[in-house]
Length: 150
Image 1 (tube, one colour):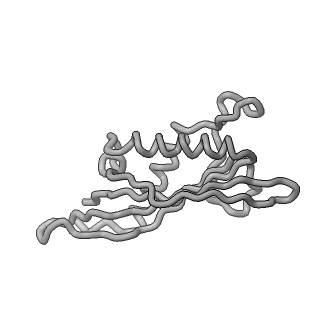
Image 2 (cartoon, rainbow, N blue to C red; image 1 turned 30 degrees about the vertical axis):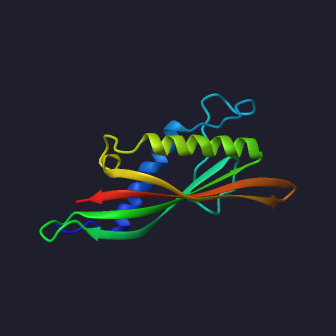
Image 3 (cartoon, helix red, strand yellow; image 1 turned 135 degrees about the vertical axis):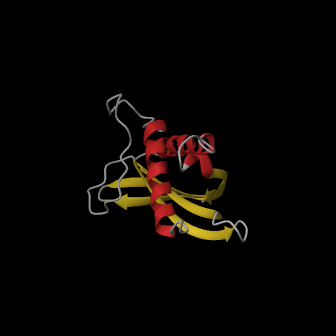
């Protein structure tokens, strides 16, 4: 068995977290959207943005071997989640839902989820941007997970 590659870990965690958030976080302002509508999440930067918008970016922070005879590694993975919205209330409610979903789904039952633990909110800050005639409110939050890869 060869050690798991960094790009594989990043891809798998990103896909897992995207599915987790799509299943557990919904747009808190439902008056203008159908009740079955979820927020938009995309990795295609050229696509015209619809709001609210949530993106996920992961990066490998560090990895430590768990013994000389083992190929298992403990990896500290940094996740950046950005939330764009037309209102600060919607942005903040989405952030609370994202944080709750991430905290409640540690040590779950999937191949990735069973190895995720020690979620830490590293940093969070708010930004406002003018996009055309509108002001878009954004929150950027960095989280870190520990992950055991065999």
